[in-house]
Length: 354
Ligand code: NAI
Ligand code: MG
Image (tube, rainbow, N blue to C red; front, side, top):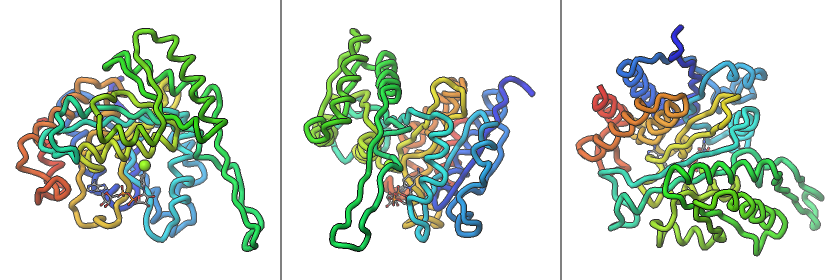
């Protein structure tokens, strides 16, 4: 087995996750042939469908089995009939946490052939990357429901912010900024959330002091949301907690080409464990099974996977093929104003490579 042979776990999941995964694999296999590396795929049927049959999203030794892979490419999980907290906590969150994928990296860019919700903005003005904390924060199991059904019923949901967790994600954002425009904006809400957010701000200021060449600022999440729409050109690297990063990345996707265009990486920067790549979007039950989902987000996620595996040239080739096909505009899915199917757009991108 050559050194450039990668073992990839494929988890298509549910809904359009399955459709877009087929196209991402098509593009990846074409790229591998052209750039001389190997992709050794193993497919897992872990999904809500599996949950309805067996009672679990993945087998008990699921994490152990995934640990043998170089990387994981995930479609999307979640489907009507299975509560969303089951699909999230039964698969996605355990993988993110067990493999210390503490960075959730979500780049957005106004691609050729796409119209921004902010018409008139250029590609240069609409390019940023959301660095979302991916292992703790507001997504926590701590808390509980008390006095259920009584007048005094109440619920508690605790957030967890550790010094290690906050510092490493902020440091990742600053490191990333040194390779981009040298600007970092931190999402905060220290006026309303008076324990965790002032702590987040304090660590942000400490890390910022180590990067005199990077300009840094912090903005309250509400104002930052408005700024992302009104002055997106002022933003480049945006770092936020698990919840803030989640919301901002959907917003960032929406102001560029929409959810069908936004990729995401759950990254273990140290490479101790496999990282996992997926689109920002979910399983889209409203269009599942119609063959019209836009596969671009998943194909760009596949390119992020190659970048992380060290196949930078191949990753850039995929990005270029996507831009070429979208720029031509002849093959576009309905969300882009066209009539093409998922498979036609995937094949056009694979064809632009080979
Ligand atoms: P969603 O992202 O699946 O869909 C939101 C809207 O965007 C829908 O109208 C959908 O048709 C459209 N859309 C999404 N991706 C598209 C694509 N590739 N091409 C064209 N249109 C696209 O979010 P929603 O509806 O909130 O969630 C549906 C299910 O997905 C839920 O069960 C949810 O829990 C799950 N989900 C899973 C995620 C994951 O696996 N990482 C992330 C987000 C949601
Ligand atoms: Mg989200």
